[in-house]
Amino acid sequence: MKAAIVAGCRTPFLRSGTGLADLSAIELGKVVLRDAVGRSGLKADQVDHVVFGTVVHDAKAPNIAREVGLAVLPKTIPAVTVSRACASANQAICDAAMLIELGQADVVVAGGAESLSRVPITVSDKLSKSLVEASTAKTLGRRVASFKRIRPRDLVPVAPAIAEPTTGETMGAAAERMAKENGIRREDQDAWALRSHRLAAAGTADGRLTGEIAPVYVPPDYGTVLGGDNGIRPDTSLDALAALPPVFDRRHGSVTAGTSSPLTDGASALVVVNGEKALAEGIPPLGWIRSWAWAAVDPAAQLLQGPAWAAPRALDRAGLSMKDIGLMEMHEAFAAQVLSNLQALSSRAFAQKELGRSEAVGHPEPERINVMGGSIALGHPFGATGGRITITMLHEMARRNVQFGLITVCAAGGMGFAMVVERR
Ligand SMILES: CC(C)(COP(=O)(O)OP(=O)(O)OC[C@H]1O[C@@H](n2cnc3c(N)ncnc32)[C@H](O)[C@@H]1OP(=O)(O)O)[C@@H](O)C(=O)NCCC(=O)NCCS
Image (cartoon, rainbow, N blue to C red; front, side, top):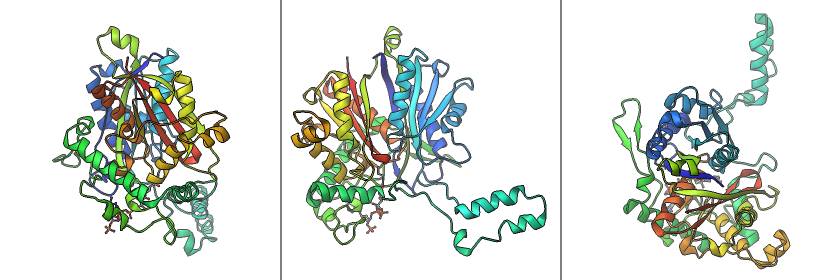
């Protein structure tokens, strides 16, 4: 493929309700769009398209990509917003690559933004219907009559739930179910969460993660500058994690706040280009997109197991096998989901029964997975995480002189994503 990535950045990832709480996803998107284009060495008017992902949409501005682009780039550059749950930024990157492969663009800024501090609170269906009726009523009497069926319980505000529309099950409950069905032990989940925090703390202390962050100047006076993540707990321990109560099945469960990704605000953006043209202009790609794949499982089955299906497909499309992969970045929705997917990837029985392959797909040694921690420590602004993972992967591949990297993300709806990136 000729699609390549030349630059990328993200905002600091902050737990929702903290430092970024007053900024909308659009405001966060502007920060990373401006910064990513600046890092690329390209000029704003060289951008052909903007693609941004988001999950919890702003009812007043559903195409956030356009709002972000209008604020930062020439107004003649088109922009589209995509939504594929926690893999929304990955979808944006794939759309950018497709525009480039089709010859419709040479430079696309792809990313994602999410404010989980500012989710739209809606009203009940009954109240919504009455309000619409009232707004079109021609007389005062009819307007008043629109509300006659409304009862006090219909006035309760409705917040978006992190639950599957088809099954009603929350992500956390699904992770809990996967832990039980796959025999993922509590101590192994705690150990994975601990490593996530330790590695993220190390990557922050030595500047590798910090270097990817575009600082945010906080309105209204822009006197406060936020440049670091606030979810990382350098001082957490196995004992502290073991003491936390299960959240999603309080009596028999094993998934805790410590082994879940926290609700987070943030944004990420990457500059995806026609790599051959960029090279000719003297702009060396950080990495090339070699392949990607999507997969989906029944949400009522193992909701967050999609990466175990998507990874072998992406590897096949790349003409590679797992032993070629030098680094792997997995989105950590929950430690139970990471460990379930790694278990499936290393299982011959899973490969034979589910994938129709004779041998296990495999995975790199844990020392080469999420080497600077993951979403458990860093946080998970749904629409932005895929961009963060891709940026971290590309920079670390350069430091370690790795040729092939594998990215995986699980997403609501039972979907899984995998992408192989390459340094040439
Ligand atoms: C799990 C979840 C419900 C926890 O929310 P919360 O209760 O607000 O979480 P908190 O950060 O307050 O943590 C709860 C407690 O655990 C403690 N804790 C959390 N992680 C810890 C760690 N690593 N070490 C020590 N203590 C920890 C906190 O300090 C807090 O203690 P306190 O009650 O004494 O203040 C929430 O993070 C969640 O819903 N996550 C999943 C989001 C999701 O589904 N995403 C989609 C996935 S794709």
